Length: 210
Image (cartoon, rainbow, N blue to C red; front, side, top):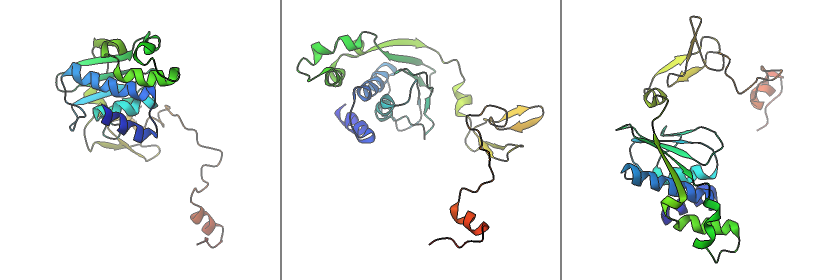
């Protein structure tokens, strides 16, 4: 565990209680699912319910990463995660116990303050006192979420490529989710303004600076 905590601290520039929870959560999932982690394949898929510190801990303890498409962030604002075994379909959700913050003193009585008490206690507390376990099933298709490598489409409105079968078929057209009305970004008043200062200066008849 110490090596995983050190790796999480390296990624995060320091070690905090939620990173410890993330590391311990991943280790607990490995124990419960009977998997050897951190994984070197893509058998385990994890859904984390918040961004931030805990995710770094889960990442280093499981080997699951957003970039490897074995981790998805669903921002529910909760330090909780669901671990799904792609081979047998088993899924379980781990969340910190609601009374967790009340138990730190008996495990770290010499801690300088409550924050350091959390940091120390979470490293030594038994899994059963750290987490509540919920067994269940995914309500989404993991196969559809992962899609197939190399599958792509082109939006008929904006011309951008769409990967992983995320296109939308609307009124006979193939659209990206943005052009279908599901957008998080709004283009400004002058969308034609060039972002590249070199290109812009040439268009204005000026010589670019070296």
